[in-house]
Image 1 (cartoon, one colour):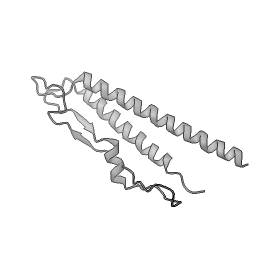
Image 2 (image 1 turned 60 degrees about the vertical axis):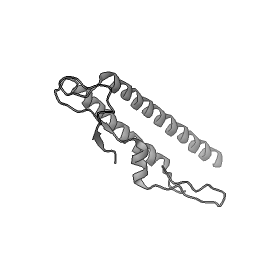
Image 3 (image 1 turned 60 degrees about the horizontal axis):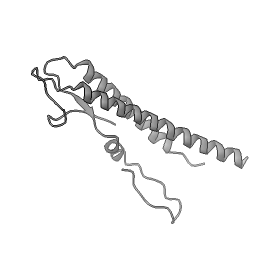
Image 4 (image 1 turned 90 degrees about the vertical axis):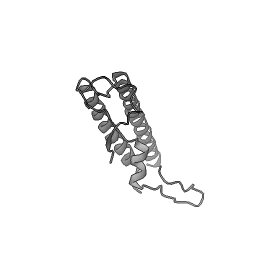
Length: 128
């Protein structure tokens, strides 16, 4: 049986979401620190594009589509909703929206892996 890279991609996305969640938590923890600049993680699509993963084309009828290490970067002034008088660019409402987005990412990732696992189990059971 050929290796299944979907689990590897799901694992990378879970790692990315963990890094983003830690970054958001750090932003929230420093919400009252004067001069603190909020940070964010580059989008997962950019991380995935850097890995240069390609889909295996095992048949001429398959479509050859290439796939579209997370780094944290300081947010630009235009990325934040407001900057306080102390120079702090953390906006708690914005950070809570990002945290909700990470929660949705974890949920989607878990659901995709669960569905793929069920598919594999069903194919193993039917072939035996």
